[in-house]
Image 1 (spheres, rainbow, N blue to C red):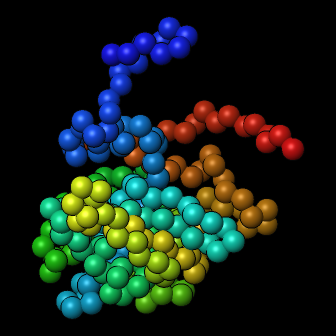
Image 2: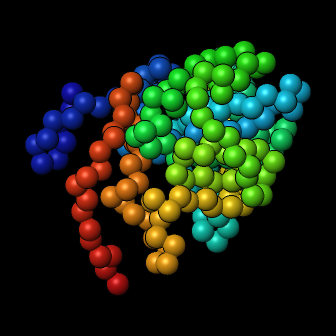
Length: 217
């Protein structure tokens, strides 16, 4: 415990004194709420479709429509989604809404590479516009993407790769009319029930109280 200027008492932890699990716990509890990239990829060897959720996910640029997706390794091993993105160079990201939360959670199970998460849930697959992978009909917001860049993130201590950071280029945006006004080209925020990832097993599922502020010129 340390006292900061102004008299507020803060719990202070130096990063080098934390375990890897503690670092993850503090990061995932601090950066909230996080959107969830529920991404469809394909195993190039088996042809199986993979569907997995990741919340270390954000936008990068609008000059090029780029997204970032960080996929942590498990004991140094690349996850199926990361390997599929490197091999196939494409993926379909679905924004998780409240009505898809439980199905998304089912697909977070760790399965063998030859198994598909789609066997765990009941969803309808539909063709995409710009990639060979299908999308999920029940998802109101889909982003078709191709691999733009892959950046292996190493640990400063051992130089071992701990995370695969992907920069993905959006090649097509798909929005259901339920959540998108085509004429005005804006989202119906009262209809888009996006889920935010918190820490542990917790999610934010209500964004009913919105605050509107005009940005200063």
